[in-house]
Length: 185
Image (cartoon, rainbow, N blue to C red; front, side):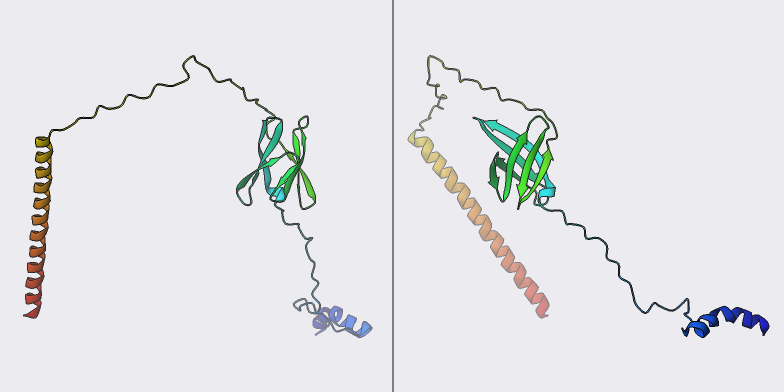
């Protein structure tokens, strides 16, 4: 009995001294404390943009961006906009472009700082500007006898096909009739 009192005494002391009921280690807390995780900002469309190309033609600079979210490629002129996305700056020294969407700006790195200029070639001018026309196939003119024989051959093949189809139809009807008689017995 003394051993039981020694064991239960530490549990009973808080209730005797402070008027608190002893808490069971298996009891749930009366108030749950909810700790919310810091909210992560969902990646915007601007975060999913990738630089894919640059085209300079006639003094006009056009930037190609690939939207990995919508899987579409956009060609946007420098200091221009398309689908709400604008390209406002191109820093060739640092290899970055400034892209803006809905008031938010992001610097996108150019993967390879390799700019290849197109070589402009002039068309070759020859003395004879007309290109010769391809030779035409000679037209064979058939005589009347050959044309008549070809017409007779076509009619013969047509008659053969027609009679073959009539025979197949007779065979099908005879077969259906014999099946109907067998079911009737």
